[in-house]
Image (cartoon, rainbow, N blue to C red; front, side):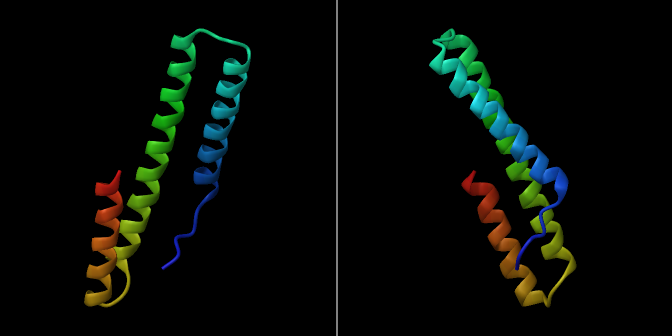
Length: 85
């Protein structure tokens, strides 16, 4: 099964990429440790949120499609993605 990623998901990832690039520039400019760690924490949080959104969409698709055996296998896979986090 392939999830169709929407524009909002793409935008979230682009925003996180921009934050990460900004953090790299901060490190290159020898910014304060606290500011760098704060930005890295923000990047991690935004990626965690994106992962949650993608897994939730995958789980929703699992619940709404396929036969019962296939659906159960895909739900199990979605749960493993959540627990892996």
